[in-house]
Length: 49
Image 1 (tube, rainbow, N blue to C red):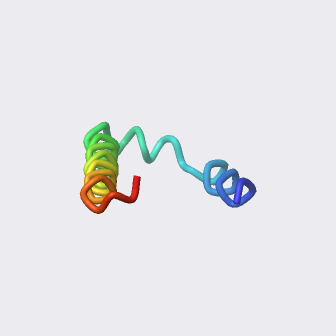
Image 2 (image 1 turned 135 degrees about the vertical axis):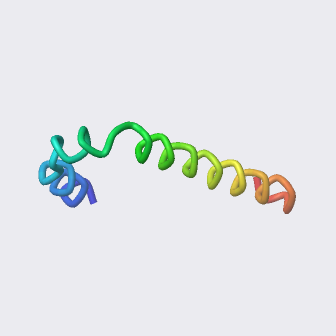
């Protein structure tokens, strides 16, 4: 798994990320927090944590 993640990271085009700007990165971070919060909320609600 670490090798696959390293491969993806090494093939990332940094210039394309800079061109896209901060907005897509921020959206990904916000969505990640929403998924995490929902998952933890469901775990607490069902008593699985």
